[in-house]
Length: 218
Image 1 (tube, rainbow, N blue to C red):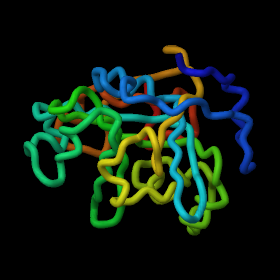
Image 2: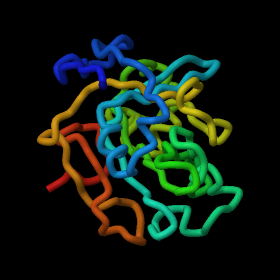
Image 3: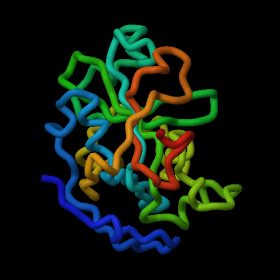
């Protein structure tokens, strides 16, 4: 059972010690389910990254599901390659890839091994390590822009390709329980930033959260 915290417990100042206390690390069984369910239930969980520079974390407020070889927007459409091998691996593993020659993106692998699918974490609400995030993204003037995109959040948390294909149960990358959002607080929209299968309603967001990337849900 996910530990609960009131939405009002999440401080929206830039303090380094928010009132939300992240809970237990999610086990592999959490990810060994249909990708859409995992994408929905990751909202309100806490993504945490430890590096030699320190620890940074954020509340997950936006996710997208990528469903396998039949999903033309999923990397698995190319089949099993050196790049896509993590998608075919154990649920609860990281899949970190490079885009546009500039940015890393973080995904959590879902379903049983051999069924390539994952959840892309698209946006976070910064929690701990905000000063470190600012150092890593020095040209950002507003804290709301530190982590409101998949490439932005990886830069802010220090997530890179060396963290690809790692278990999410023992670090340096982990996901912890956090806030339990009700269905009324969640919206589902088509995925954004892609051209293939762009109309599939596989993007989950926390309604009204200012840290969500892209357009809000109607």
